[in-house]
Image (cartoon, rainbow, N blue to C red; front, side, top):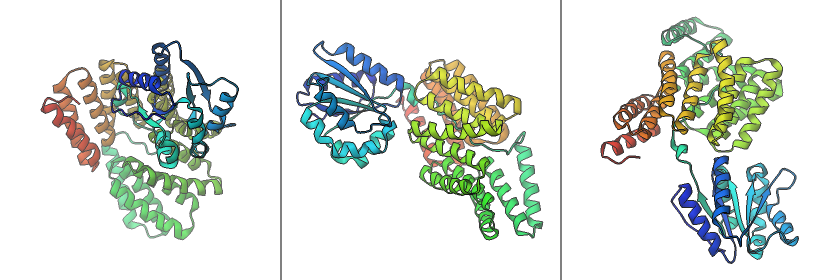
Length: 449
C-alpha cells in the first residue's frame, strides 16, 4: 500500500496529489479524504475523473444502515468483477454507518490489502478523527488528506437556543436582575429561593456573566434536589449545558444535556425534552457530525410541530440552516434561515433575529458578496449591542473583520478585529481573544492571514 502526505489543503493542490498517488499506487491505496462540504466532494470526484487516464474506471459505493460492512461490500464487488487494479472506488455516506463501520474497518483491513484496491473514503472531519482513534490498524495502512474550501475560514455562524427570556434592551435586563435579587433577599421558602435563583441564572447568562449564572444554577439545583423537583432539575441541567457550550466545553455541555434528557423522558416533560434534543444536535453539529445533528434537530422539530411550539421551532430552523451552510448548500441554508426569520419577526424574537442576521451574512460572505455580508453582520450587531449580548457582538465584529480582509480593506479589518478581541477578552473567552490578537499582529506586520 502507498501512504501519501500533504499539508496543502487547497482543492487544486490536493487533486494534483490524489492524481499522482492513484497513478503510482500499483499495489493499491486507501485514502481518507476529509472534506465537510458535499458540493466540494462532488467537485473533487468530477475533476479526478476528468484528469485521470482513460485506463482508469470508477465505482461509487453508498453505505447505508442495512449494510455497514465496507470490507465485505468491496469483497463482493471484487468477486463479481466490478473492481480490479484500475478501479478507483469512491465510498460515500460513511458517517451514516457510524460507529459500527469502525469495527469492520479495523478487522477487515486485510481485504483492502489483498485486493490491492484504490479506495477513497469521503468523510467529514469527525469520522476521520474516529477512524484514527478507534481503528488504528486500518489507519496504519491508509492516509488522511484534507481538502478545505477557502470559504470555510470565513464568518462564524451563531446557533440558536430555545429561551423564553425576552427583553427589549440592556436596561430592562438589568432592572429585572435587580428586582429578582431584591425578591431573593426577602424569600424564605425553599421553592421560592430556588425559582428566583433559577431566574437569575438565566438572566445573568443573557449578560454573558457565566460565572454568576453558574453560581445561581448551582444554588437552585441543591434546593430542587432536596425538595424533589424533577422538572426543575431537568431544566437546570439543560441551562448548565448551554453555559458550558457557550464557553466551548462541548463534552461537558453534552453531559448536562443528557442528564436533562434522561429525567425529561422519564417524567414525560415534552417542553424541556425538545429543547434538549435541539441542544444535543447543536453539540454534534459543531463536532462535525452533521448526520447525527440532523437526527436530533428533526426529533425536536417533529414534537414542536405537534404541540404548536412556534417559538421553539425557529431555533431548530436556524440550526438546520447552519448544517446546510457548513456543507456549502447555501440556497437550502438560506431557505431555513428565512423560514425562521419570518416567525421571529412576527413574535418579536429579537435575540433570534440577531443570530439569523449574522448567519445570512455568512452566506453572502462565502459567496463573495462582502457588501451584503457587512450589511447583515451590522444588523446583527445592532441588536446584540442593544440586548447586551456581547458574545454575539464579538462574533459579529470578527466576521466583519474577515469580510473586510477578503475585500482587501485592511484598515477596516484591523478596526473590527480589535473590537472583537476586546469584547472576547472582556467576556473571559481568552482563546477567541488570542485568535483575534494573532490576526491583528499578522496584519500589522504585513502578513495577511
